Amino acid sequence: RGISGVAERLRIRANKGEEAFAISGRLAAADWHEETVRQLTREGFTIPADRVILTPKGVKTAISKAHAIKTLGIEQFSDDDLKTQLILGIFQIIFQFLNI
Image (cartoon, rainbow, N blue to C red; front, side, top):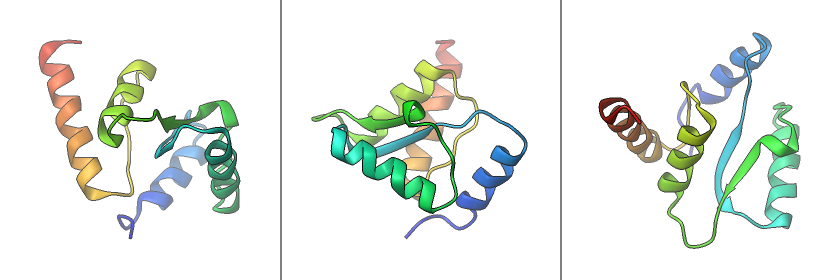
């Protein structure tokens, strides 16, 4: 079950022309990547396939997502899992505090 309102916030951002990435906890494999792109399209999110990022094998989801957020310079993010959203928020504070 996802956090209420996340999908709507993403649609609003997309309609404003903001750059969007899909960072998933799914395993980084070709079949999962293709399925994730198809699912996003079905749900009304038109995110280019090269902006769909999956989690490498053996890496915790929150760590993978935090790394992608930091590497891509993403300043605003939403997650459909409250626990992950909280962890990512903590990482963002730590990155800002350490100025990295």
